[in-house]
Image (cartoon, rainbow, N blue to C red; front, top):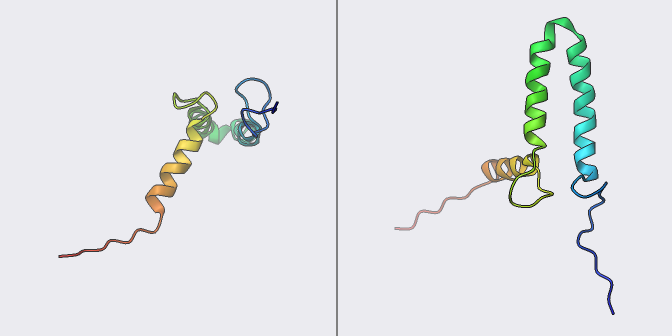
Length: 87
């Protein structure tokens, strides 16, 4: 009899991964620092809304977050492309 695991990712419960914490906690601290400065409060709210958008789960899987999809799209857009024209 074999013991199998569903995922090798380290999780903190059902849907929270350590990668989410590695991205979420420093960005939350950045938000607090920016919000404490009076001239950057609007910018900090914009940063917070972008962070919340990137940490939203999407329907592909319960553990997929929007930042993973954004990284995949950016890799696809900026990868080296070779176009070959054959007549």
